[in-house]
Amino acid sequence: MHQQDFTKPDGRALTLYGLHPVRVDSEIPSPSPDPVDARPVMRWHPLRSEWVMYAAHRMGRTFLPPPEYNPLAPTSDPEHPTELPRGTYDIAVFQNRFPSLTLTAPDPGLGPADTRAGVGACEVVVFSQDAGGRLCDLSDEQIGLLLQVWADRTTRLAATGKIKSVLAFENRGVEVGVTLHHPHGQIYAYDHIPPVQATMLRSAEAYHADLGRPWLADFVPQERASGERVIRDDGEALSVVPPFARYTYETWVLPARPVGLLSELSDAERASFARVLRDALRRLDGLFGGRMPYLMTVHQAPLDGPHPAFPLHIEIYPYLRAPGRMKYLAGTEQGAGEFANDKYPEAAAQELRAVNLEDVKLDGGDQ
Image (cartoon, rainbow, N blue to C red; front, top):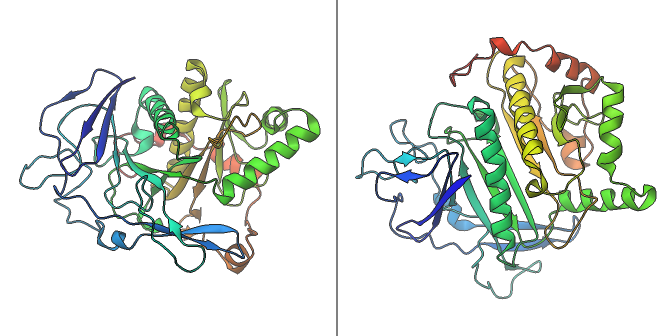
């Protein structure tokens, strides 16, 4: 992995990554030379035991820009700068111009509901310079590089001494509210352990304490023995529709060896993980013959200490339950947190295995 750090005119950090040495052929741009006055705060929800983020400055963030202006593409007109320079690189990461959390969030003073500064970090990860592509259009090697980038960002954020948990994710599709369609994801870094990761950690550590081994050490052999829910087994990594899937075609990508962080994967494991992830995304796009809207989340162990029981894995939540039919969260799901699924995971996995990948185009267009 090659990387090079830069500073934007407005003071934000930019890092370019490549499979080959990075080369920049233009000035480092920013849509505006002036920094946004970000003053995010957090308030404690006493009945849900979770923090709620407030960031009033985000009301001015980029929303449905005109087709001729893509803020995530390399700058072509210096009079209308974007976020990225021209040059040779594969992946770009920069600080979000309108962050929900910042490492330098000022103390807001006294306020209701245990108000405090919104300390953390928000980064944008641009997967490719191709505005019309998809994450699954990248090569196996490029997705392997993305795994390294996520690992590097996690290590860098941990080094600030202020971060306890890092979540990388990708929202894709107008159906889920995406307004910038250039292939990209985000990273949110928290100064606390969010509820989902905290629950995962408690459950994983309780399992390890009871049985003396990580949960993943049992889950992978069990799924392999059953075979009903495995989509692809690549040896060092595999994809499954978990037996407890909440979304109809929910897909997990897991390493075969229990680890907690992406940085703990060996080169062979990372390569296998990349192949399986690309395969899973292509199958979801091929399922109904078009781009599947989804949310993809990368779950790593919290950074406040070694957590050998925590299972590194990626969860993909597809938002279509059938062709043209969205999965909307119902009362039981939003009000009680208990999901209702219309299809058994075994049937969903069988459909995903049956997708003919030869019919899934790699040109970034709809299938």
